[in-house]
Image (tube, rainbow, N blue to C red; front, side, top):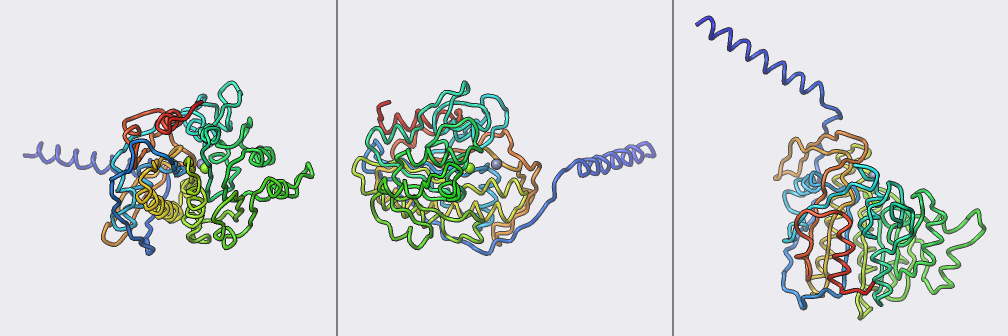
Length: 379
Ligand code: MG
Ligand code: ZN
């Protein structure tokens, strides 16, 4: 009897001390966020008008891993527009020289099909410029567009329009944007288009190239056709409101005039920011903003019937763990484990004709070749 008691006591002390030891080794602070900005989620039909898509909309949640998505789902009382996607896979995100990628190399792989070194933009690992899927779409007569919530010169969008050794070469990226021929681009970064060291005024150059150049959301929303360079301030969703949804709709309206089809890249740039700041509210708000925009895009794609929508991420940010949540109230508790990016696979979702190609586990370079294949583009 005594032995049993001491064995029990021993095991009890062991388990308590191991829990204590585990708690001691946790890093980061657990925080809870109560969402109070719930959005409606629709169900979209999967009846399409052709087997081959005419348009591709590639939506990138920068820093969006499975935990960010599930935090958003919980915060929206269990439902997201993302729930509509039936073709789901995973993307492996490592870069040419690092296990953990940055957004430079991550975007490079998605845009050009080449694994490259961290911080590189539009070049392979040897430094050679490589064409983006957007460029190839353009050469095949498709219209193109870029919509982001950060600077349009930031690493993710830059990979679709520029080729530079380092992502911080913003003035050079801006001048390459002017030459890119992209029909519509909306985002921040105006400071590198004017007041430049080389004295060039890229806003004037854009006007001469036939772009409608606007610097506020109200003017941008009036544009229905032609080329558009829309500049907006970079800010958190709490300050910019429905800007991503609205600017995405503007781009869709304009690009839909092109009978040969279009390629549009939409980036929810700041899910990454929430991860870097280890901020649950920031992360969830940006995630829900992205999901609302996904809803708008699905609405367009369902009606159009010839549009393939792909949603993915370049990497996960923050090492987010969900430790508790409540689907009835939208309360979500999580803990971040790093202030940087992580090496985990990120999810891939596809909807529309050609969606079946985007399942399984694949490298992040595969988006490039798959999009070219489903659109039947000539290289
Ligand atoms: Mg980005
Ligand atoms: Zn980041």
